[in-house]
Image (cartoon, rainbow over all chains, first blue to last red; front, side, top):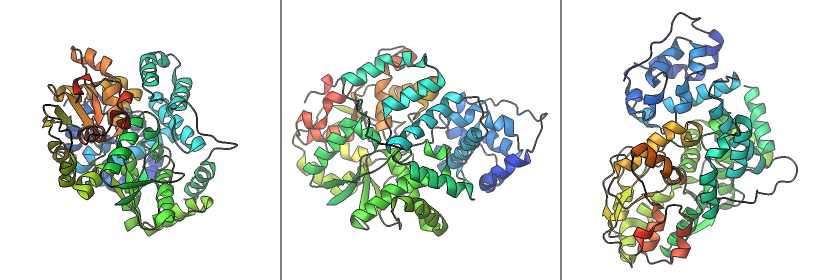
Length: 191
Length: 285
């Protein structure tokens, strides 16, 4: 696979970024750059940097390039790379960590992916379960209302086949899982 | 045989037919499923990117509820994403008591405690290994002869946890299909990924992945799967897939439990066949 050249002329080794990556550092240190992850990834063809490159860029501390990379949002968590890795590194979880950092840093690139997952979690917090109608409405509102046009034929087909739950779960007052979400936030803040 | 059942969010809406057929078929096979009361979303692939701890606490709340219900019972998940998320907690706390403690500090606000007892199982595992292929074969009333069926497992059914099969070329579904009388159509991409949420967030990549999967089983009459996201991706975008492949695609995507139900002679209505978007005319049996 053709790989894009990694630009090393920008600021390297962002120390705060390395700190945030600390839990994944063991992973990255042990990567031997064999490229099994790239070879087994079905989405690698569409990535700006291959998974193999991404690990190396993390080690170099190239924060902006890593966190703006399309690669993060093309991972569909299929765990193929994780199981193929001859060093048995938890690569899928590491991509999860990077996605989380990109959200925390308010990276605007690939906001459609970010908005989708955040909309999903908002719905879960409120009702305890996901709800496709509310999820998609929130997603369109935060990303681009015109996107909804694309979904009209599918939405109609799903309605026709009774695949859409038309009533929202009942929640009175704050969200059903509010207290658990808040406690988790406290616990993570206290780390 | 009795299990606690975790249907998961999709089975209440987009995968209603999976829920209906799973309950009907397991009842027929002598398995009792008791739905977990007050279950919540497992966090899917979204929780992990907002908070690592939350991604563990959400499934743990369900495991704590299962534990409260009947101690060390088995929790059966029908959705592969739910299965992985629930199982991940089970695996992680086994080696990490500090993590278990932290999870319990969060669950405490709901008055719940989790000790790590319930065993998490995939519905496919229960059907194939607890019920067993022989018991299924003995109950087949309407063999589906002549039907060419391509099994599709998707990723999370067998990865990263593979306690009942292998991660890249699984055979569990193939073994079940074989006793239903169908012709098992070879599928070289049987454990490849359907793209999950990419069909929404990165449409062009999602459609390509789904197109590859459908092209790989050219000549099959239908595909069977055990994951609601796989089923939705394979079924919902066939107009776009037709464009991508340059040929009209009309591929019914059934849940394994729907096909099982047909072979066991259960009424079509109980299997939710009307909920499938791509009609199953070619499958009249």
